[in-house]
Image (cartoon, rainbow, N blue to C red; front, top):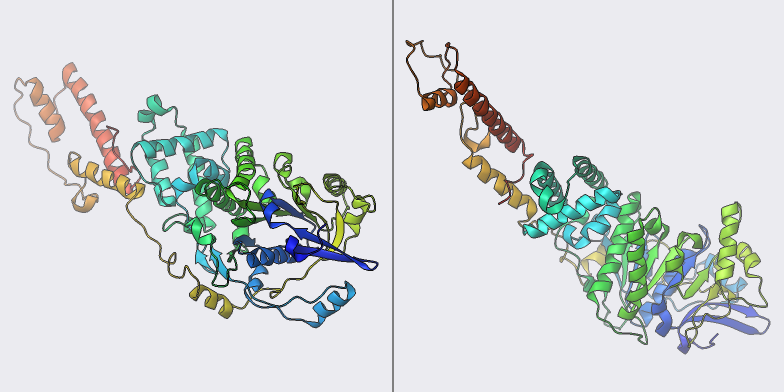
Length: 525
């Protein structure tokens, strides 16, 4: 490995006799992605912070999710505590030059950082199907709902738009069957239940406008340091599908919005995907193919992706093959699956004749790691056992006062705080309902002013008149006028009465359903 800081980001080092073995992550190979693995409490968070600092120093913006609330300390300069001083002395490491790094705080719920929003249309049916845990049939119906909305020019911005659109499609399913295919009421119900669950988890705050401009992640400060974007994810982890879908959406946004640049001397941005197993758990094949495609091609957009997880087996082989830089913390072989994970991790790292990788993985101390990084020719280097360097910023979370100060002085302060609810599918469909109700024929006891049901007027039946010969239209007039006759109807009158009664029941049902808000649109034109 290289032996000077000019070679890249110093990740870790180890004293071997009189020589110091150092491991550097080359910035020009950082977009070849990477993997950071290790059991809980083995030092992955410190490794994340050290790498983020190294990228920031070189003007590379960073995004990472803060699962435990520990990473916000990167915004404050560190200090030499008694514990840190002891660790440095034991490992023959030099104390870093303590410094703070420019930081922007984000939060889907808008509580611990600037709000992050996306529109329903921008997320799309594939990612939403994953978030709602829909099966293949239900996902197909959701795609159909999006297609109908697009064809009708209806904007799907927030969850109420999607709920209204699903209800509109469900209520008018028969009119869509020929053009779009069958719409199952059970599938519509499953989608609606999934949306209710997401709303219950607070996910409604994620959908809407103003939508996140991904360019706001790619900023540098006056000193040329890359801004470290930290997503508060402690609460978001209570909704793991929302968390995984959100991060995948951001990664897809980077992929779709950035131009092709090939290999650069340093990445445009580095994206750390913590708790990566949540992305792949029970993911359908079509989504796995999408993830593999994004990871494989986003490299040419100048973006490096680093998956962070406990077990290398959490990452599918097709994705694992794209991750060239490896940092392996300790694994515990307590179960057969753990033993398989240790063996798998050892076999996927480049062998070192002087190191038994399989045995070393189970013996690593906290803050110690096996490291294999790409060299100047893009080849994995020989695996080395090193101590990860401590960060130059504060280890641990910041105070609420420091958090508020960061938000107030942020370059995006005030940009996303106020939600905008412009006219979209919900309002358009509601307008159709109101128009339909205004144009509906008024019957005795039907709607009154304001669309509410008026009190039916009770009238006294007219006195019986001598029976005379009556025409066809006289029978219709009696039936629709509400007149009651004691005489026996003819066969023709019975037919008319049955048809008019059916029409009346249908009009009544539609008026009532319109008043209750369950019909959110008229018939297709």
